[in-house]
Image 1 (cartoon, rainbow, N blue to C red):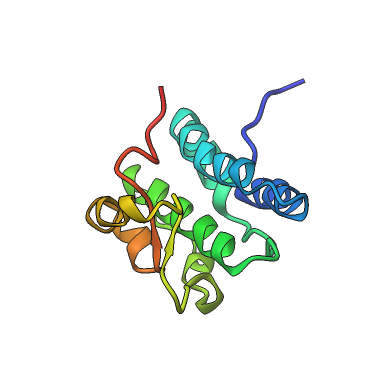
Image 2: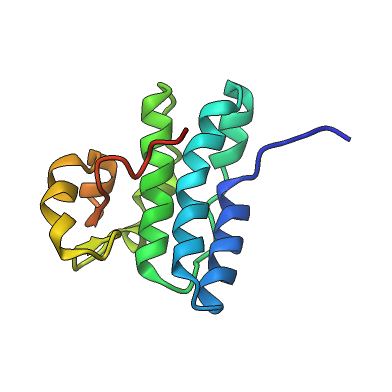
Amino acid sequence: MVFRWPTIAEVAVEVAGCLAEHDEASAIRLAFRFVEQFDRADESERRRMVEVAPPPTGDFRYDALMAAVVEHSCVRHGISPPPWVNDPNRFLDEWWFVSGMRTLHANAVVHSPVSFKRRGVFVTEDALTYA
C-alpha cells in the first residue's frame, strides 16, 4: 500500500463531519493541519492535493477557510493556486476571527496572510505554524 496525503476535498468532508457534530475545534485543527501535510508532500503530490475543489462544508466560514489554506500553501511553494479558490462562495461578507477571542483580533488583523485577509478570515500569528 502506498501512502498518500489527503486532498483538500477529503479534508473538507472531515471538517463537515466535525461541524455536524458541533466540534469546531477539531474542524479548525483539520483545516490547519492541511498546511503541514502540504508542506511535507512532494510537488506532484501537492498539485494532486488541491486540484479538486472541496465540497461545501455546510458553513461558509469553513468554505472560505479551505480556499485560504490552499491559496496560502500554494503561494508559499511557488505553485499557482487552483482556479476554484476564487469562487465567490469562498469569500465572506462579514469578517471571521477564527480564534474567537476578541483580545486576539488585533493580532489576527496584523498577522493573517493575504490569502486569508482577502476572504475575510483572520488567524493569529502562530495559527499556521506547527512543531
